[in-house]
Each structure stands twice: as structure tokens, then as C-alpha cells.
Image (cartoon, rainbow, N blue to C red; front, side, top):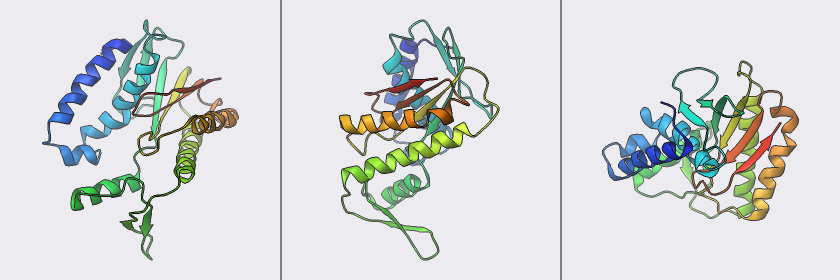
Length: 213
């Protein structure tokens, strides 16, 4: 079903509230299992984007699409026809982190994950790490996802790329956002071969970094 940005945000927030209250599927939700994978890795990113573009895109309509097609969202009434969503906030390391949390009841949200002599993740250090290190890790993850998506073929014309990054662990400052902006612009010669625009947004939905072809 196609929804306006206002309709979509209202619809998603009602489901988000239900998910927060219902603890039945807590473990599945934290590990992005089953329907929660799409919920947190496709629906939530679109929600964060539309919160910030609600006024500008008020005449447009959006619909999430399930399946293996080369886009995640169909768009009507907009210069964009499709959106592809790439997430950097949940990977193998974050899955390990949440499993440790479920097993022990506590885990450091920013602690470095160490590996054993066979390369397997084995523990999470309970030590604070410098702000700039965490920001650089985020920049590296964003860069990798943008390069990965841009290298793929088969995207339809007028597709925009939404890169969903973790803005909870690190409280970004203006200089950090400037670094993210320069990262997107620095990769422009790469992503413009595949996408017409790029949007960087996090689950807080407070700051949008946008660049067009």
C-alpha cells in the first residue's frame, strides 16, 4: 500500500509502540530474526528518512517491497522512482553483541569485540573507546556499504540509495556530520554511476545528509 510520508510515519509509529510493549518476541527482535529483519533494516530506515523529508515530499507516496528485486521501496509523485536501503548499524559483530546481552543481561554497547586464535568472536571488552575511533569506524562502514551497493548492476533508473547508520552509540557533533558529508561527496564519482542520490540517516531521525547526482 502506497502511503504519504505523514501516513507512513503514523503507521510505523503505531507498530513501533506495539513492538516496544510486546516482549513476546524480544529475542527475535534484538537479533533481527524473521519479520524483524525487514522491520529494522527496511521499514525503520524509510521511517527515519520520511520524518525528515515529510514536508518536502508531502505529495509523494511510498511503498516497501518484499522480495529479491533490486530496490526496497517504490515511489510515486517524486523525482525518485525507487529507493534501495543499505544498513551499517547491524552486522555480524552487532549480532554477537546482542547475543551476549541476551545471555548475560549486560554488554558494553561500544566495547571492542575480540577474536580467538581461529578468528571467531569470543568476547566484548568492557572499556570506553575514544569518540573519534567510533566515528571513524562508522565512516568506514558507511564507505564500505556505499561502495558495495554502487558496484552492483541492475538497479532501475532514478533509484536513490538510503544508507542507515548507527547514530545511537555515538552522539555525533557538527564536525562529525561534516566528516560524513565530505565522505559522501568524496565517493560521488563512485555512487553516481549507479544512483541519482544518496541519503544518510540514523534511527534517531534527527539529521539527514543528502547529496544528488
